[in-house]
Structure formats: C-alpha cells, structure tokens
Amino acid sequence: MNSDKRICIVSGYYGNGKTEFALNYAISMASKDIKIAIADLDFVNPYFRSREKEELLAKHGVRLISSNIKESGSDLPAISGEVSAVINDLSTRVVLDVGGDASGARVLGSHKNHLTQGQYDMFYVINANRPENSTAEGVINNIKEIEESARAKFTGLVNNTHLLQYTTVEDVVKGQRICTNVSEITKLPIKYIVASKIITEQLPKDLEGEILPINISIREAWM
Image (cartoon, rainbow, N blue to C red):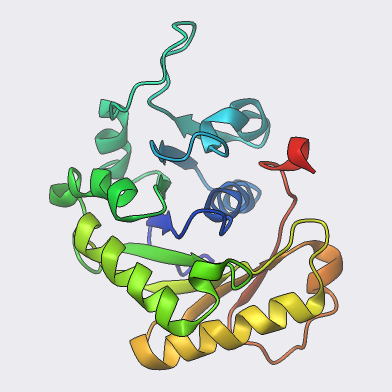
C-alpha cells in the first residue's frame, strides 16, 4: 500500500463496492499516521456514497471533501475547489471516489490538467458476482468506457467479489480467476483482494494482490 502513488482514483461498476474499498483504503492509510483525504466525486449513485460516512472518516483521521452543501438540503453535482487543491497538495495523499460508469467518470476529466500520467494510481474494483463483471470481457468493456470518459488510464485491479454478509471464500476465489483473466489481457496487475477479516484468513496464500480486510460500513443499514 505504501508503494501506491499519492493520488489514488477508485472506480468500478455499480454494486462492485468501490466506495467501500475507497473508505477502507483511506482508513487503512490513516491508521499508519499518513495524512489522507477522500474526495467524493460520485454524483451518479444516490445510495452508497462516501459523504454519508463523514463522522466515521473523521473518527479515523480521514478528511472528507464533498460536493454536499451542509444544512442546505441540497446535493448539487458541483465539484468543490478543494478537490483541485488537495490533488496539488504534495503533503496529502488523496483518494478520489469516482462514479461507476462512463457518465460518472466524466467528472474526472475536469481535473485532467492536475493528473499526470505516472503520478497517480487508478484502480478498477471488480465484483464477479455482478452480471456486468461476471466475465473478463464485461470487465474490460467497462474499463475501456471509463478510461475514455475519464481521460485517464487504470493502473491496477481490485478483487472485491462479494455477496455482502453471505460472501464465501469460494466467491473471492471465483473473483480472483476473473481478475487474473483480465490482468493477462490488459497487463494490469491485481493490486488488492478485499474481504472481511474472517474470509481473508481462509484465503489461499499464493493469490496475487495485497490482502485488505475491511469492515462493511456503507451497506450496514441495508443488511
């Protein structure tokens, strides 16, 4: 994780758990006494968004940058000037939580001038239990759509294959096979394997990617 670029962009199809990964990634960084912020750029998905977890993030020392206008009752798709500022702040690592399709990723294009190739990581989060990402072909098609819209290239894959509290080791291993196929075709490395601590302790030891045990926080009220 420490070898990742200072700027980490997280994207992936709806329901893949990209925001859950983004939150846990940022919290894990903060636990290492790393100054980090998470910018919520997902203006498309109305249900599971990082800005809804501001208190949780603050508790762990993660700064949240959001388009939400407090106490206004509004949730406008306007990008805060803070986003550009934190991208350019070399003392702070930043996670950009981006919308999960071509339309959602388009907002990233507005920051193109601040994102230099080779100076950021961009991770595609895969949940092989989602129909759109159940095959390597489906994943690759989505990757291409997002890259074209965002005007940025992915640098790695995240296996976040799950069925919420019903997730099994077999689910994660199935997702790893899809990730491996995508990696072989695209040459993108598998950077992380995400699951609950109980599941990660049972995974095979020879899987590609860093294990990231997570606490489910975005969907807890729905479970």
